[in-house]
Length: 170
Image 1 (cartoon, rainbow, N blue to C red):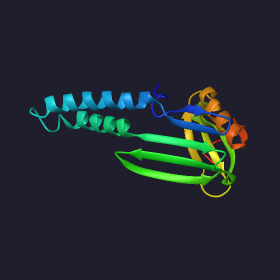
Image 2: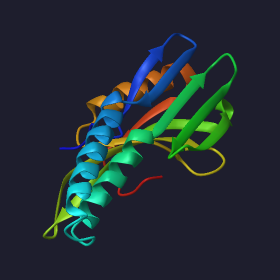
Image 3: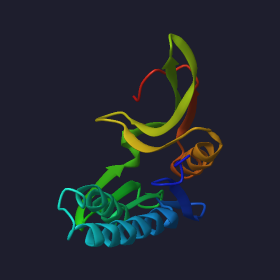
């Protein structure tokens, strides 16, 4: 239901470069939650601080979503993958040479309900030769993940792996 929150979208694609970024709806949803939570918390505060706690937490979640930034740039000419992430203004930047990447993987993560295995979620990540996998996105259906994976695989000249039987990330 909330797959669109925090999902990556292809913002720009050329033959030598692809830019993935969070969808604009993530920021919009965060702003709506921030405003609604802050208004309700402000109205509830005079009655009871405990009553304002839950709306305050919703406003805090909204602030997180509104300030959340994530951008992945695969640049074949420079030979690197740049990952820029930030939340609440705290940034984390990472540069990975493309030759450290092994493949773009879409893996199924089965859901276990009452002892039965049923369709769960699909996870897309970059498998690295050295270091931990780089998480891209997850969704209930693999079509949107396949578009991301194909764009990255084409530009970075990586292998695309689809693992429908995987149990866990990496």
